[in-house]
Length: 501
Ligand code: BES
Ligand code: MN
Ligand code: ZN
Image 1 (spheres, rainbow, N blue to C red):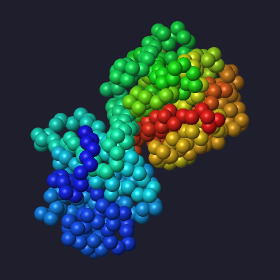
Image 2: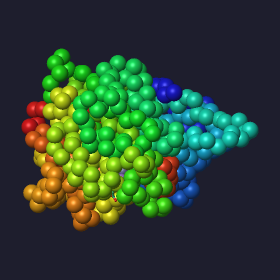
Image 3: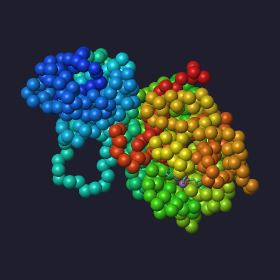
Image 4: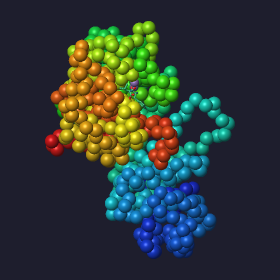
């Protein structure tokens, strides 16, 4: 899709050329001076009159009208050079890409060097552009009957730059991988519960494993029973669909050590069970495998980038249903770890399946654990819809996750996790743990419960209940699934540096 060219973009015959424009005091300098000449100084005039705006994220379409062979330019306002960062640039690229995608063109070009500044290298710009283009033009096909209007999609995107080809092409490869991995995660989340059952998730993981040569292990119900994963099985008990414990291993080091465990909640639909969700709360619960999707999206990125790290991904996949067989409040169950759990709320099912998945990740040698889950409505109350909540037992690991999240542009905020919180999840009179110790601070309770199974292993919990989906379109994507944390997890793995401990 992306092609690199070293020619002069302004002397090309492109149908549509994206050009970056920083807010500048007076005259154009650098490569834009050349464009201004082609326009006989008209560009300067249009900027002065405000017909072309350099204000951050403003988009101005200008036609070549014979002066230039380029048919049309899209000027992307970048604001003040000093204020533009890698992530704000990405949003501007997203806004521009969306605009172009709506123009029904077959080809697109970008004058990459117009986006380069003292803070942003050509490689950064290439990475940012390729990722933003793929993210922002994502669409979930859906199930509407097709219209007869022929589709016109952009098939080639030419990147004009004077920077070294090799570096630009590896930046584009990286940006594309991050974009595609995130989009795969989005699609998994957007699929309705009847189209994506636990078995489909397992099949998807198997195919991912084949494509990127991961070691794949998929435990079926009888294997899960043999291992004694009583918490996972309890959640599945009311379902006619069998559960699967999905494991993918990526070995990037000579030895299987320093293993990063990525654990994703894979509830393909959450009715709440006997602690049934109200009719308004149940709609949308196809997204309850968002954590699994983030992990699978990250694994796709890892499979393409092939970092020198070891990763084990573990996904407990099932739905949470109601039937005569379903588990009930007051039931006491025994987890894979041996810890017993009093079930006070069958709608607090995520922590149950994750308990056994976290234990299983440790069985596979995980030395570090990150779990990702659409775990609680409480995190939405606490942090809103645009922040992922975190909990940790390890400062160093948390720092690494936080750094990765900055780089990915995905906001994380840490919640407190104290001895008192641990006491609350241990407060059952008849079992070791209690799966729902009350509504107060219940985003913390959800995480703290999982922490009981991470035990001494450095662990970070990420609650994406608010961030896994969004109600409205945004610069880097449409309404619906966001694919949040796929990039953060992949960056965590890629940048994982044991020296820093
Ligand atoms: N899947 C839900 C959490 C959720 C809520 C995700 C809203 C996305 C949007 C989870 O399984 C759940 O039901 N959590 C309960 C826990 C409670 C019963 C302790 C909740 O948050 O209400
Ligand atoms: Mn639930
Ligand atoms: Zn749930």
